[in-house]
Image (tube, rainbow, N blue to C red):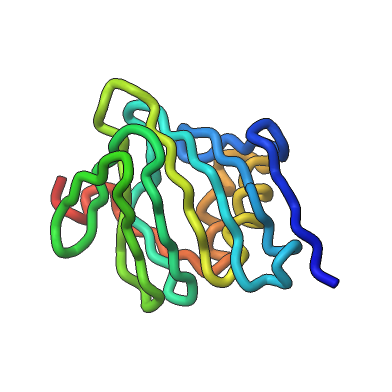
Length: 148
């Protein structure tokens, strides 16, 4: 029989990723790899550069604050209560907290895998981030990819 579980706000390990603090709420190991849920606390100026992952869909819910999401279609400012969907297929995207306060995003990825990537990046030499990301199917683009 399936069991209902509760993950408290202070449960799970925190990872230092893209200048922020990421916490796996539900891991792929708990869902047989079908999805993972990751909390991302993004400080002012934080967020990943342009990247894509063709085989993963991401859904970001902005729980606190605001972040600027960049895509090839332009920039959209997402505020608390907004949701951003990055479908599978390799859409290049980035986000950055341009406000003066932390932002909190709840990111669900289908299938799981980014949760394992974040754990590996956290435990590695910072110079290995690109190599580890590529191992998990990510593609990286120059910081000025969107012309900003």
